[in-house]
Length: 434
Image 1 (cartoon, rainbow, N blue to C red):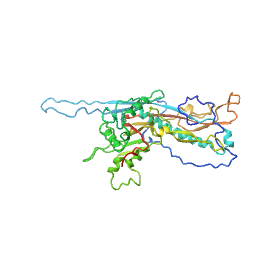
Image 2: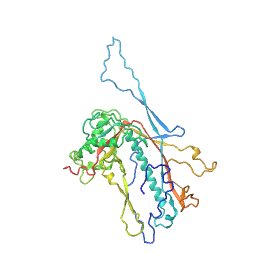
Image 3: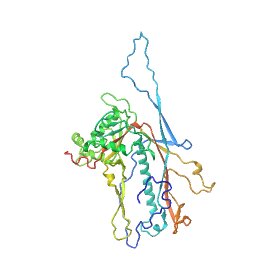
Image 4: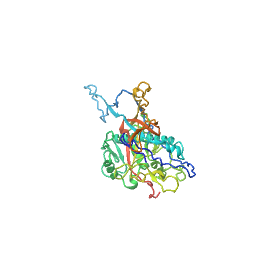
């Protein structure tokens, strides 16, 4: 069974893990080790904000906004005449976020597999696997909110008319993504894919990345990620670095990017080594493990699937391998994120109310509320007997892993995050004569 997301809290209350899922003797078995790509959070550089109990479930941030420069010339009157004046006033803007929660569980584990099956300490592996899903889920929550709340996007190689400058789109749906509302939905994604440049014209190459940087700085006024820079000196432009987060293929393809190869310095060896370093001198790249990819119909395919393998004639026939999902690997629409200074802040939700976390002596409670994503184990489960009657786990035959998570993200300056839509290709320069 794969990881099943977005189920109701009452789903699978009585489900048990198949006791015949894993292999056991009498044939001789050797436990094999396999190396897998590590998991990581590509958005851990975003700033954090602490939420405290008894402050409600809605967080509202307040930011003082400077007054705009509303003229390109100033023509004072003569000193002998009545002077004119400029009246300066400013506003403040607010950002709002709501605290969310989500539960993670395993099926119920019967003691029998741990008693008779070959592989020992299966609960330990299941715990690590559940923790992996929790971490990945938190990353995907933050990314989805950033996509939905960002007011501007960039469409690579966009055909037809455009709002603002070529590629930048300001008339996009914007709102907080909820379990019932998706402003940027499948219809929006389909319209984006229809307007992206064909073939290589729609891929996120070196020159396009640098064009996005220039537009971010000079058109959108995005402040560089490493903070508000000092004023430029003679013969230089405003300094600072931006961050681009996306699939590793974007960075890997720079090795064979036609523009990079045509303009590289003589000392750079792109034949025997891959492209390395900061893009364009001031764009930091962060690779995502599971980048956001969208199918042609606007749906979002799962990154991985369980593939059943043919039976070997020995042991369990439930032989599955977790592999990349072909629909995800070949998805035509990719999304990267070009970011400047503090577009969003991750909210660190504090502890639950003390009445639900304190010592269980007063109320005779044996469970405590923990919503920090900690994986715990319990035998407080309901089971079904042979007659399909519900009973308690009074004999202690079953265990279950579970975790309760709370999460929230609040916009700071969302226009400092530009989702970049591009046409994906697993070999973008395969048909280009380098």
